[in-house]
Length: 115
Length: 111
Image (cartoon, rainbow over all chains, first blue to last red; front, side, top):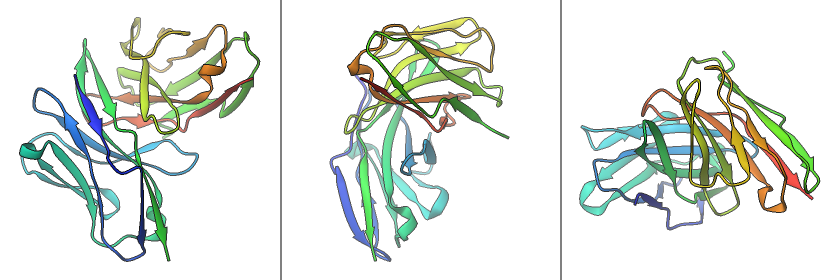
């Protein structure tokens, strides 16, 4: 069965510091992987996605993620965090359900940015 | 371009009442989904639709119903509200592994 694990429930970083959010997945086939960000009271916004090819993918807002098949991981990174990056981050893996596409979400990592 | 619109944004229901959560999209996507989000639990799929007239159950469908008479609309119906249905509900659309576009959510409290 497909599943996504985000080991860190909450992370605090200083503004300007680097960031890495961890994501591990379980999926029998080649995964489609996604990172979403959710600001308080808002819906989820797609940051980036991996389908195939280059294992380092670039997203919006200066984020990137690296797919490592051997580790079943898809960690999200940012070299220098801004205060506006404080939000909840969700990793998701895509799977086909019937003829639709279902995404399995992790439980999220809450990011706090301190001045 | 509105994307995905959900109404209402907030609602308080009494136990046993019914209501419909509305979801409308203007992107002409065939795939639409309803998720619920509970604290610390991520998102769980309730129902999904691959096109007008076609719906199917997700992971947590009990207590809910859906219909899809048009490409644009995908309402979610709660018939007998229970406290366990207190949650934030998100509608989403997708055109095939490009990633979801989410609505802004409906926060429902059942008391």
